[in-house]
Length: 309
Image (cartoon, rainbow, N blue to C red; front, side, top):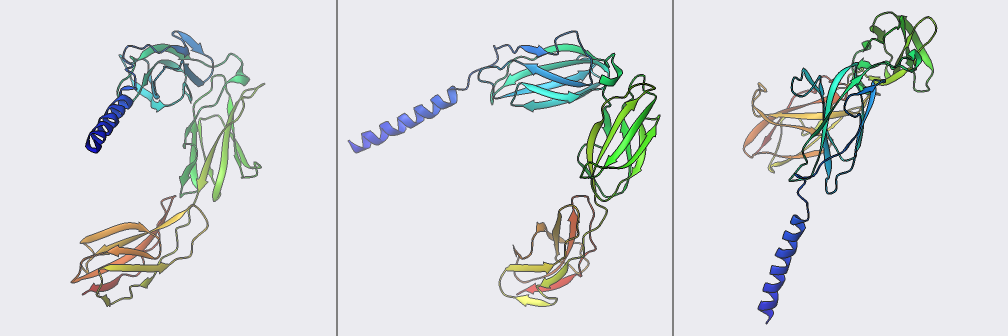
């Protein structure tokens, strides 16, 4: 009797698991409904919001935008998967096709496609400056930065400001071009651009940029000491290094099996102390180097040798 009960339990679990899998509905015969931009729409703003209706049993939506259309695409300007039913992005003035589909882990609805055109508002003050470079929240290790943006129709000049973390203007320039170079201070700076003509101006469009031009300090090896030897194959490495103000820093360890440092055995991002498993009956050579998020790197530590007996 106990054996029968066990078998019934297994059958029930298998059936229940299969039932769970089958609960995800086939979406291939469903239709997704576009809300905006509708086919043939004119969007009088370079900030475009795509919106569509929820599809029952869809766990995500794939959104694509092509210029000028998918049949003769010069560029796929957007290809993203999101869980919501709305997505906002900035587009330059042009004609576009966009399409969206609902999907789950195994099936998807057919794409529904719509065409639209982006133009600028007739009201100059309502137009938007589209920033192109550098990207928002970029981290760099140089202070000389070239800022770029798209031209705004009827603009005679552009005003560019640098703001500190208290939102105070630290530098301001104007230009008739669509790019300009600034020397940025260390740390986080907001930069913003607005278009101007003889009587009006647009709102500012703002991005953030971080400058960290300071390389990390050189790591100082502590253990294993040069020419040390040990019996165990688990080696505890330790070192010291004083952090430099700026972006987050990290250390990398390089371990070689030859004095010329050509036969790399291990390279890892590590914190002190750290344990690494190595082979017995081998002499190793190692050093450390520090890096930060701005791609600065320190001088290498002194190279040390140790032996596992």
